[in-house]
Length: 460
Image (cartoon, rainbow, N blue to C red; front, side, top):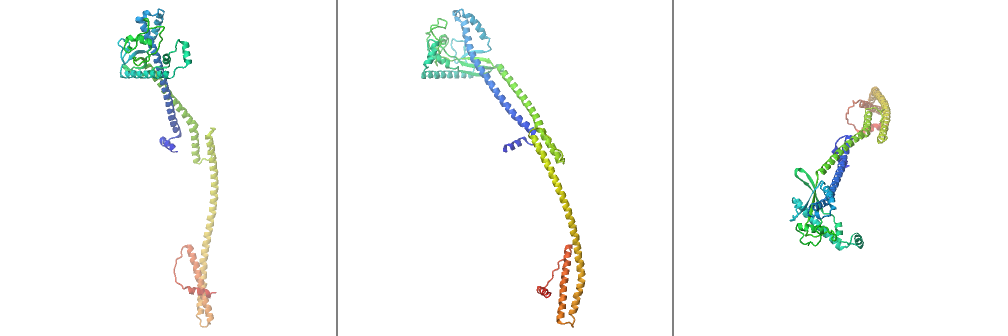
């Protein structure tokens, strides 16, 4: 719930269509960028791997080309068999026409080998020293493995079946992988080059030929009989692993501008494809949201507004065979129940109005009857007070006659007292009538409770 509220704050108050387009576009953009980045990175790694393999093959080609040219144009060309001359004349142009350049590098230039050059800069010198360190470390590791675990009899028998003798040095050189390094160099004018560096393995025949050309071979006597050709039948090509030997590195230079142009062109195509994909996907999403989601919702909203304005006969009509159709049916049921509830409420209101009219009529009748009662009480009180006053007056007269006996006087006094009590009751009835008309006034008076009680007893 908290994440949804945070998303609402980011999106703000916007329509469902805009939210769908924004969220889908952002998700699609991230997905396409991620997939294209991964594809571009994988493709570049494949290109770099291809350049590395190409550089490794070109090192072999450079070695062949150098030795063929040396043998063909050097002092030893006359001693080569005449049958090899056409082969060299065919191979050398093919190797020379390859689009690459190569040099032989060493940390120290041999005194009699003009083909070996020194590193061009400090970075290149560091690469050569690192290759030398890795090369001899690899030699020592592999030799220790051979000394710790000699080859099996099956391996020796298999090798001896192909050659006259099994040599662990030859088996080692088959197992050791080339030691190499790569570098991207920016030259004059911004021209980029892919430079591949690979250390050279020294063999026994290599030492015999290169010993007169430089230092580092003083510990090796020229005890091989090459007959001036550098090739013999009784001496095999055996690798020599000695850290005192000079480390020569073949540097193969491959133009990197075409590769970079191809990579940039591929990136441009990927970016264009991504833009077109996002555009088409957003267009498809716009059509889907507009006609599949927003249109039914707008229809429901319009029907709801009409029902809110009092048009209860209107109903939602959706034939989408999905949840929107279910919502439309539920909406129609709700409107129908609302209409029925309003009809029931209207009927109840009508009945209530009828009862209110009846109650009002009853109130009017009660009011009229109350007025009649009040008038009756007032008239009756006035009508009764006159004869009652006469009775009280005559009782007072009789009570004052001397001819009456005491008993008769007592009777006359009772008549006068009862008349006054009745007069007070009539006055109280008039006061009640005044209470209903709102004209009654309170007048406090003093009386003796014993006299009132005695009077009540005398009337009995």
